[in-house]
Image (cartoon, rainbow, N blue to C red; front, side, top):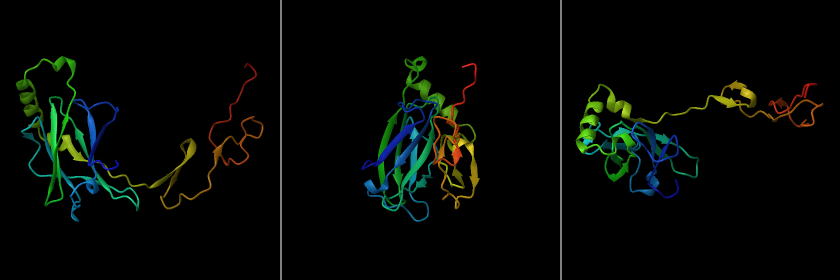
Length: 195
């Protein structure tokens, strides 16, 4: 993230569109906000201002980056189909940082529609039960509880990952044989007589 306060990304890596999921990252170390002990940093924002999703700031997920880097905070945005913009700010419970604005790419079939089309459509979308909770929510917290192994092997227990696993070709008759490998990773090509 560097020195930037706010960063966002989509699953596709392209500019965000209505109907897509985006993740917003906030780096409090590049702002004047000091994470609150109770919840850290919170997000408050709405689509096509002034249409808001609730009035209360939403708690963001803390992401630790190691002992030398301060944590950053994330939140997921499931962009409604009729959203044109998202305007938002961050708070530590005392001070605010923002506002920021993301403009969403409009699908070609909606390009020439009047503003009332988007306002009325968004109002209808967000008036459904649970719509705001599904549109703006904390990022999942990943707890590592298993080791990653080659060839789809799984080893339970995050505290036992210090094994000397060397993936590679373990077939001594193969030209790709790796004498240091102790787990076959499928890299030994097998040829039939018909080849």
